[in-house]
Image (tube, rainbow, N blue to C red; front, side, top):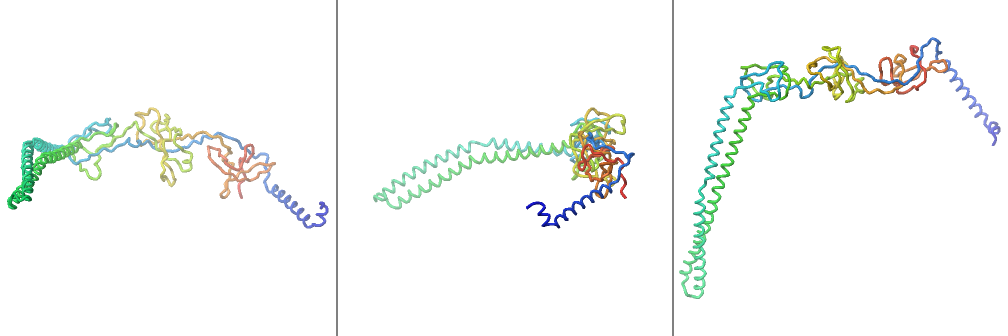
Length: 410
């Protein structure tokens, strides 16, 4: 069927199509008329690619690394006889820094030494067991075996003679009784030999066990005695002293602290990074920081870890970022110094616009795009910010122009 035929048969369809086209044209014209015209003096900017370094600024403090600050205490109770370190002293690992009185522990060691000597003497006596008793038991066994053999042979002969009627039953029973007695004597001789052999071995075993117990007790007493000499577990500087000579310390569930040692060569920066920026921080990023004591000097480092737990500062959620310090800083940095930190993430190319070109309308970020001399509102999604610039993740394309100072919303 031809088009003219379709139109003649469906006039309503024709008028519906015409109405739709007219409606679309009206909407387009109204839309264009509603978009404000851009004046010739309005400042515009082109949406372009820019290099963002997104420097993150934070404040923190110099802190010892894990294991670089140790509180030294005593594992035993006693009176401080000598304190060999003071605040600011440099100590080496293993150096004696304090000593307790040892008279009580020396007495225990002497007692354990005496017990060990006694156990060793008992063992010596057991090892000197008389081997003659075993020889005698062996001789008695041999004699019992021979007697039992003769008695057995006699019984065999008398048993045959009894069947032949050559001897009386009483005579035969007497020989049988003698045979039974010699067998019992043989069993007794065998048991006597076993006892003689095992007697010396068992005594030696018991003496050896007693000697080992005494030796272990002596070693335990010596170890406890050694706790009276308190040694530095790490090399470093004495940061604080919590006792003095003549004081009595009591060791309980927690060891009493004598002093604190800090290794000033193992320090780190703990920076408090705002939750808005923490997503940009990853281990390995370069860090630059200054301290108030040396404001003209920059120190370097790298992010070593981001702690998972948050902390609240002035009602702001922040995360501790640990920074490993690089370079020579010996004698300059000390714990608790305030640090002004700049974290330097890797540079990246982003689509950027001036931050002031963005208006917040409800939950949306709006920019005004200049099209044919008019400003058209467009919703965009914003990413990183760097200074006066903001990254546009979605909603704009490179080369488009936008109003730098968009009209305020009514």
